[in-house]
Image 1 (cartoon, rainbow, N blue to C red):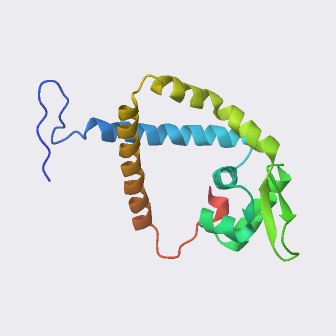
Image 2 (cartoon, rainbow, N blue to C red; image 1 turned 45 degrees about the vertical axis):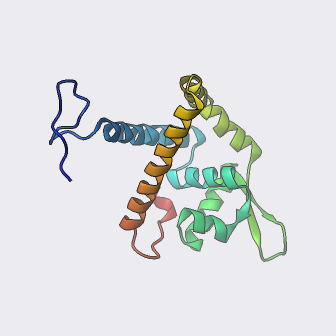
Length: 170
């Protein structure tokens, strides 16, 4: 598909320039990485441990196997990850159903600390969208749903079937 040449207002993409929203998405991706790195630094964890903390925050306590599946890491890798989360006070193991099934439970204090660190960003997003109409927000949400779906497909296309990440790599 050929792009339209840019008009004098610069709103249309030229042959050599991407549409503005693509540049904006790239900027958001780069800024998201900066936020993630800063949050990981403040919480004294690596990227994979931060991913685990996010999953546990969003979904609540889960078994080792479920966490490994969500993070796309091996069971052995998730064991080391959980050991590090326990050692730094971010989570603990708990027997909930039987002696063979251990659950990973996030630390409430750790979740509170992460939430506190993210409060300025959350407040700024709320401030910037406070005047949007419900229709505008619905359009933004639809666009972001489409972007997330495209990224999911892109991520899946780059991962070999059945591949797991190494938990120490992040």
